[in-house]
Length: 93
Image (tube, rainbow, N blue to C red; front, top):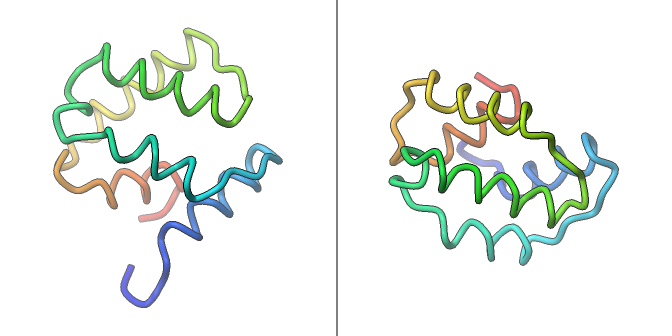
């Protein structure tokens, strides 16, 4: 997304969807631990989803966690391209 600040856009989407204000520092703290291999491991994805859920103070059911994991794995996106993951999660093409 040339010319746009993806991090601000992500924060706006999180606020809009959850009604919660999340700081860029909070997201950076979690994002700094995400590696391409994280997207390949069910247990690491589960842990990441729970971290984000706790940070946003939005409960996520096991069924929803499983759906998110399946959606990520089914997307067949390049795990080295985190920006494409963010776009997918934000509903953009």
